[in-house]
Length: 191
Image (cartoon, rainbow, N blue to C red; front, side, top):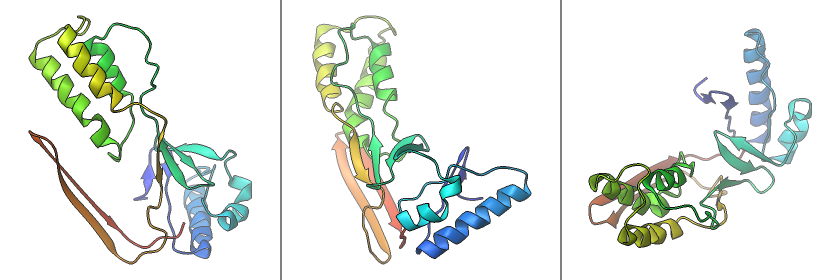
């Protein structure tokens, strides 16, 4: 049950046989609790064939709020639309744009971090939610928003295809007042 998140269960395996076995175990566990675990998907065609009676239709689905292309095994994170309209720039609008980028893993944090710092500045200037930004702030906000515009940010779900034990650590200075620390520890997985 450690891999269960609200309405999504995420299972991983090192072999297709192990993945199929985990599917059967999960079905039994939930069945014993009188719950119908369904709509399975896999990035592996052999596993998908083995579970076809419970398979979710579609190539691109949402898992934990992030779109996943199961054929290419790529995650899609939606960025800002370049056509944001001609609405006045107000603190409420900027906050909504930044909050609209759903990135629970922090993969696009460097692209939106400057906008978050800019929002802090707007709070310090004590602008109300619906007060139009002064011209200097408008120019600065456009510059920050442009950094988070574009098509979906695509990242392979499994960054490395084959690897042993791997640890990635970075310490990056992003802005004069901020340090960004990110650590990921990965193990070997196939599916």
